[in-house]
Length: 183
Length: 183
Image (cartoon, each protein chain N blue to C red):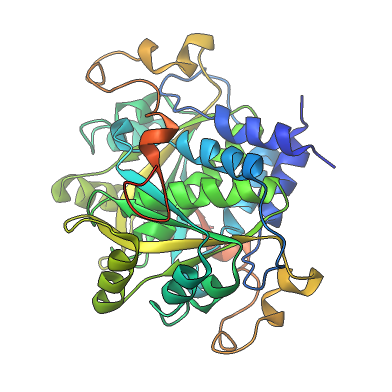
């Protein structure tokens, strides 16, 4: 039986990783991550999703150009595209993304969400992956072992993320009790 | 160091719980859950959310009538309402919900998403919790120790969920490789 404190530490320590080592992800580890994703809960258990696993370097590079902040996909060991039934399932999509990223993190694999937008970029990504018209594709998740310890810190990431704040708001700003705004 | 297999088991075993014991959630446990939620990642670290913790029984009962499947809120030890900056942050909202529910599960606490809709229900819920106009409130998460072992199984849940499928689609239906539809 794993201690609660260890599980909370696991949840709290996942960070976005945008620079990856060239080491591939073993098939059994990838399978384990996909199985954990499979068990994600969804509204009325509709499971309104399909996953496309991408390891082809050319496809990863093309996807990396399908979003203004998606450059990390180019160097990922793999990406998982979240193909949703339609654009109204984003809460379920977020649950799936978080579960999949945590399952990767359970194996020491870093991840980052790549948002495929605006629509012309999303359309291009659907074309690369052969996603049928009518399905919704807005997210591809990079997976890979972190390039180095610094890759676990946002401040080590180059380029167009320099204006992103670091850390989190204090709990007193995050939480109200019984009524919005009540300490 | 917790083993990967234990962490994957933790992720895979969380199920929706809709019937709760009357046992309250200790303050330090609730604090731990909120801290884990606080560290959830969001798009460009915008943290577009605020949490309202509800333990007042009357408020929980009112919230339970603010959605056609939200009845479980009436018997929860507590609920956490996810107040989002606006309705375009549902992917981040889903990540937050999943992290919060997993942090609860790390302490043996069950949870279930209560969807507050349609709009007149959502408006009523915003009124109960004093959420300002312009903010988006669509989700309140029930938290509580499971009433009994059967509460961990969907089939034990009464009422209007009898048509919900049990289990998950097989991995071969869930996943494609490189191209949508490719085994």
